Image (cartoon, rainbow, N blue to C red; front, side, top):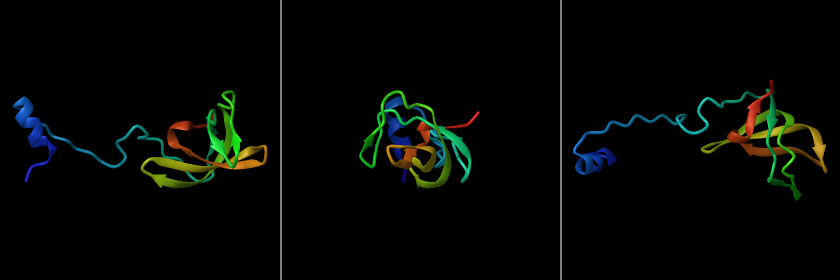
Length: 99
């Protein structure tokens, strides 16, 4: 039995090969390690009743653990508390390794 490639063959008259691994997504290569120092874009997020303003784009913290693989999400312990919030769960696309 053929998969979606056979439907593509009928439409385009060509065989298309798809090779997909679970890490080939928009967050590919964004694997973070526990304890790693990172910067987090919190703009527009709400956590524990606190709404982060647009200016909070570079909050510094440490990766605690990965909480989800698809989509990739991480629990980050912030170095500074924002109105009592010191840990946030954010998607990998909002995190970048500290310089």
